[in-house]
Image 1 (cartoon, rainbow, N blue to C red):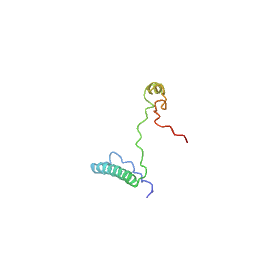
Image 2: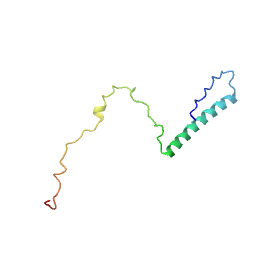
Image 3: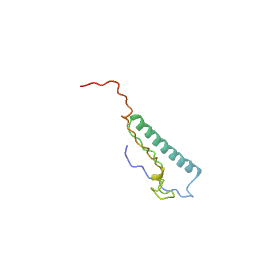
Image 4: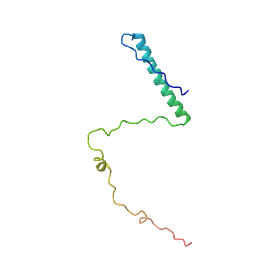
Length: 93
């Protein structure tokens, strides 16, 4: 099952016919379906699937790290949680 995928040779413009183009499209569609079904099988088995990774935003304009400090929320003053407790009953142990 882990045999290497055969390489498709490059097809010249003059050798391409409408039938060849349709067959190449069909091969691409079948490969997409195989990948989707393999992911579904892994999901049903409870195994991990390939993660869907979002594109990196590191190449966007702006220096990395310059916006990080200003975009984080500042924490307010801390309060004591024990100060508001009412003591209903005192037991000596």
